[in-house]
Length: 167
Image (tube, rainbow, N blue to C red; front, side, top):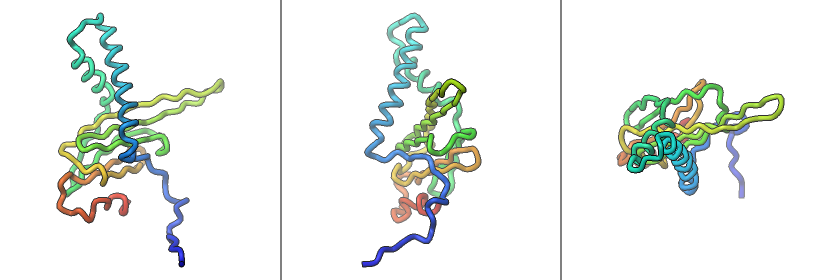
């Protein structure tokens, strides 16, 4: 039995951000949820621990993670967003695509003479219409993260993972 080897050298392909697999989404989203919950509680404490505003505190906290909202563009059956992430290596970016939104984690590591500091930034972007998360892909173009996904219910089932094959 012969083995087929690709002529493309995978070592020369540029690194890509990690698109979260369906089985790992729950863990990733729980991590994001915990960050939002901690911030919402901080807001609750800051305004004097007044009860009854939990939803507004939550929405404010979630909104703080989504300050740098990119524009979502549409091209045929695809939706694409571009998020500037200045000089952050692809290996430090994780992308979780859901039908109605994208949650992005960008881990920044700053190295000092006495050690290093790591921090995570989260970005929450809502799609303008539902997408098929299984068709999603991400790559770095210059200093921006580009995420694309096919619109949900698209009639071209054979191109479900066309993004991954063409990029």
